[in-house]
Length: 117
Image 1 (cartoon, rainbow, N blue to C red):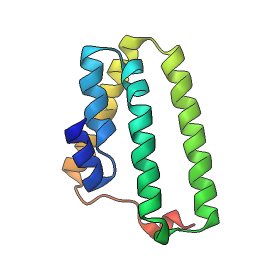
Image 2 (image 1 turned 30 degrees about the horizontal axis):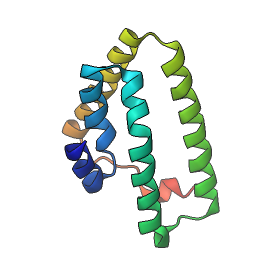
Image 3 (image 1 turned 180 degrees about the horizontal axis):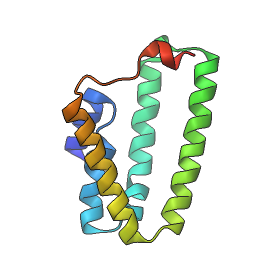
Image 4 (image 1 turned 90 degrees about the vertical axis):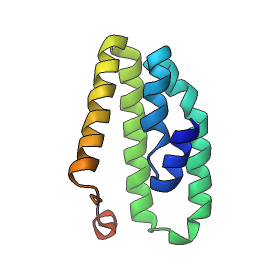
């Protein structure tokens, strides 16, 4: 979690990428996600507070909140319905895809102008 926290602070997307697979290697993907809910929530709230001056406006906030809600709902359903062995495979595929994208296109990002639309 320490290494994931450092990566999250540097990139905004580190702790789950590192901590979930490490915890899942010893326990279960479901437990790994449950363990990380509170730390992720706290760090995200802290980031919202710290960067509040960079608010992108109500349209972006609404779209982001709706997308987050739908993603959380879909993820929760998957955690409860999909067998653990399939969740492990899915988690590995997503992490390898993320790493592959970062290696192939290290500067990949979605432009801020697109987020504001």
